[in-house]
Image (tube, rainbow, N blue to C red; front, top):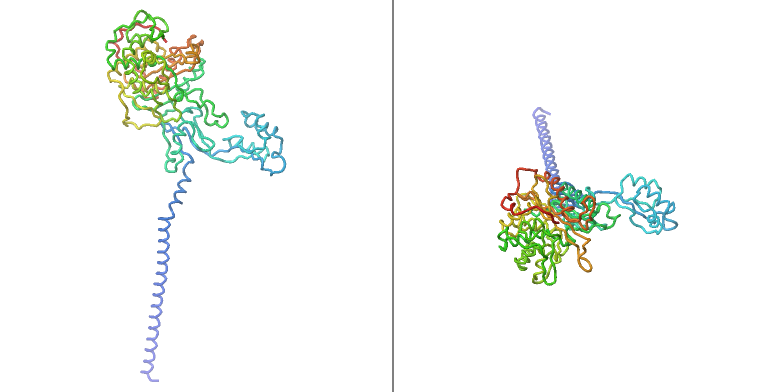
Length: 575
């Protein structure tokens, strides 16, 4: 083969190699493209699937995850964020007679032995009743809310029928404090009686239960009020007591107490004893605490324009066969300030008679005395209200707090209007944000309210309310001691003693009401049963305790200016 032929063969071979290489590269490129397209398609499908799930199927899953982080029932807190009610997991003691099967006895030991062992763990349980409960073979709770260490002790008894399931329970960290405000949660998980019932929907709804329900209550004020009421109740051997601290400008209830109280943590053991609320559910004739209201109505109407005018006071008033008397003689005559300082029924009745039944009734209606108290609690008593046009005798008796029965909360709201410039506002147990304008209705002129602040301060300064006079806090108020009605008329031996107060009277911020149900004359009260000796001293102790907590410090350099009416009054005794 010549050299030219050899060269041609080599060139041809090189060309074939180049073509093979090009085809191989082209195929590799196409494979890469196909693989990339496949991965892109898979990725696109995955993205579309994720978007679909997110748009149509992911919401319930997220909602379930969010709900799992929420408490089973929302918290209730006071105005400062202190926890009053909270849901938490706890053990319960459950009796399961079928634990060992349907044949034979449900217990390893006798019911009496098991009961004795359980009483060693829970000394407050009734051993005899517990043994009977175990013997009857019915399943059910033996005790709710038991501690882990108690559960371990029960387990050590070796009784399979005694089970301790872990459940969600409602816990009240403050115990019995504010129990009548809070209420409790029943075995069915529903709120009962108090704000637990009012807030039931809000506390269980997934949309709202993550945010605590905030009350107007201040636990510090609540504790002080309950403490001093309990002392006053014990000192006077009273069968019950009630008290309120109310913001005069917003209607917020900072404390509400009814004694005796109950512990909502123990409601399953103690039953519903003492859940009755004396502040909002029971109506009382509140006696002479109504006299300032009647006088204010007369000043407002212009039938009292001269406070120095004197009214006869040494003879009982006889109206239609009824006699209106004073507790004792205050002399031949009294003017308006003296009538309040000495608490004269005779003079107040004459003032009301001149005012007239229609105008006094209209004032009482404007103060809400003819309807249930305006507050969120479900249990609210209806007033005993004289129907129709008021006769002379009805007008006179209502003027000093007889013949009409209302709750202590009615009285608190009325006194707020009496001292705050004349505006009545409904009470509330929900916190109002500072600066919020609270709607109300005018009942008294501002000038009338200013005059009443003077008169109420004078009653505490030189009248029947002297034992409520907390130094530096400029307390004003009025006593009321009313006989309780019963079969055959009023019971002279059973009183309701009330003191209605406000402070500081030069710029009123809070109303304080204290009431004692059937107080007795004791050594602590100098043998006296009237409000001047039992309810008034409670206010005198409460105010110095709560004043600094509420930003009100004692100041002996400030007071209501009563120089224009002080010469009209000589000090004396009354209720």
